[in-house]
Image (cartoon, rainbow, N blue to C red; front, side):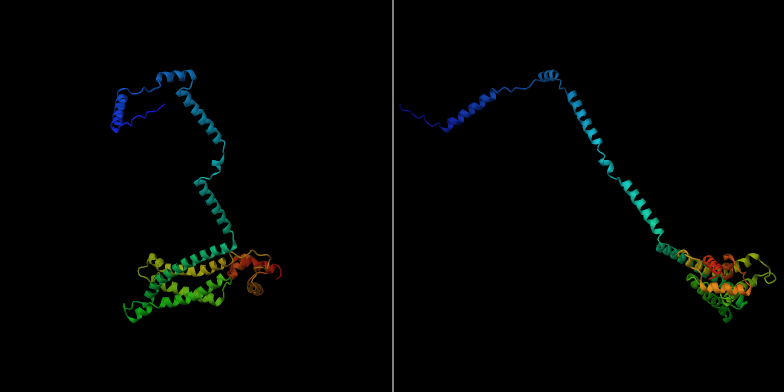
Length: 306
């Protein structure tokens, strides 16, 4: 049997065939199966899977998951920023309280306070002496013409008195910080003499029967500076002497703090009759003008036969 091959189609014929097929499809589109909304609603009613059921199922699932997570206390273990700040503040307060009890820290604080007090006292003393200088100059000038040699010399009276006074006060103050109270009778007399001269020269022109007319307010104002200077020079050595014993260890025996020099001085005063045989700590403190701790130590040393 002989097979006769078909002739190959021409390109024009293929193009015409495709164009005819496109026109046929455009005129007769294939049918698309679109689900009917009514049929879907019917199926949901039959199975019970409505939108409301699905929402409720989602809420139930969410609630179960939340209940599982709420049983986990891990979020409660994480500190909030406020708790962290409070914890740091409490820790810092505890460290500061512990540091405040350290002996070295107590000494450091005492030194700071002592330095502050000395600075304030010296500032007040300088102002008081400057105030007193004007009064002494008026007394020393005695009406001399302004600008004359006597008038200028009068300004030097108070400074050289003050410098001499400060030598005594400074020595007593410094030795007081080292626990040695300098109460030599000669120094005490010199100090009182300088102070008396300063007060007298400031007050003399304004005293009754000298000033005409007498004015009490002017008298008080002119002696104010010398009085403040007297108060500072008297109190500062005592204050510094007390600071020198503030942060030292507590005594371990009756003679721990007993200064041999102080004990010998008290014994000499007892032998001379200026002190009784068993003087109290207050009597020793007033007589020697020393710190109360030193006075108690001396009293205990004498009582123990040291």
